[in-house]
Amino acid sequence: MKKTVVELQNVSKIYQMGEIEVKALNEVDLKIKEGEFVSIMGPSGSGKSTMMHIIGALDLPTTGETLIDGNKLSKLSEDQLANMRGKKIGFVFQEFNLIPTLTAYENVRLPSLFQDDELSEKENTRCKILLEDVGLGDRLDHRPTELSGGQQQRVAIARSLANNPDIILADEPTGALDSKSSKEIMELLRQLNKQGKTIIVITHDKNVADHTKRKIFLKDGKIVEDRSRR
Image (cartoon, rainbow, N blue to C red):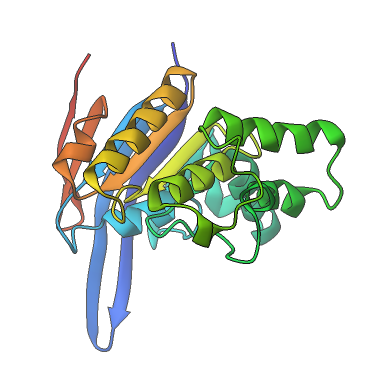
């Protein structure tokens, strides 16, 4: 039986907006097992972004508990949380978030450098291989402005894999791309899932969600539907 890698236990997140309390997540229970390919969908204001921050250990719930690989995040120090994010989770963002002054290769090396100031030759070679794996072996020395949107997102995906995380958390990964590039990025994520990575995609786009094997629908901070296909 596959283990649970992400678990939300009765999670609520409340934001104070002046005198008004906004419950972005409302007593959510969720389990995601290793090797799943999941999309989290919902309209604006449904709680998608809040759920992404909580799943990604970027924020803690107001009440309830988040577990990553069985570890209760509320019990971890800031340093331990940062280490968890660095090693367990790879992030892919809508706007790529590449450093414009760095080459594709240097951008992919960044997460590993945050974990270790001096990378071994093996680790440097791995960064090059990651770019080759996403079809950019001939773009190692190109800066983001010299790459198309689809190519920049491929660099971002390679960067998310730098520390060989178990989970890839992608926030609207095709939101800034045309339809052809979007399909290519989703196919790349599908291939990573076939290799054993747990992929969690936050999206409002049904076409993107259709690539995933499990769809979770949020509305007003609650899961209103959770369906899987074989």
